[in-house]
Image 1 (cartoon, helix red, strand yellow):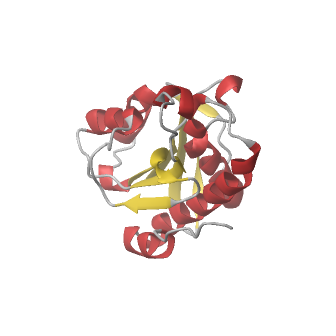
Image 2 (cartoon, helix red, strand yellow):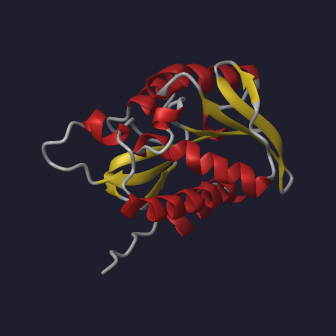
Image 3 (cartoon, one colour):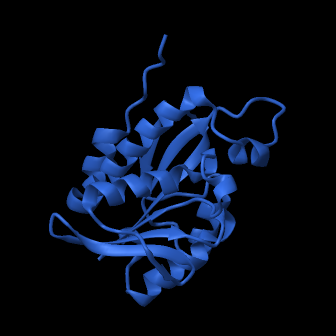
Length: 192
């Protein structure tokens, strides 16, 4: 079994914010795979099913972003899923809006959700996909930036990035991290 988690915050006020990019990608992944995310388990909405022969557990932590690891760590231990089989999708203010970056492992890079997951898994050796939601404007508070509503001009590029992130996560589940990185770690071309 492989666990794919999309990070975000519960509540309607956070629904259309940059910080919920992981949740939106997971919703698209659920749609593509036909796996319903509806069971409240260990502090998260979950759904499980098979995609191309691979059993997947999809997770949307309800613990708020900074405590995402409490839900993910508990589920990974319960189902005996090693860190390398936990794939996390989250936002990244340091990447341009719509850019994807997949890594096999690494530090939290200043992302509090990833920091808590590393702490609760006891490892940073889990793959992660960051969806660019930046750049953060100079003089704008980070928390305010990621929790404000996405402007109309970015809604389409971020929705497209979420769809690519969903496809990348499914490719990882099916073929591994190498093919997913090769196909989706491409710089996006700025639009004129």
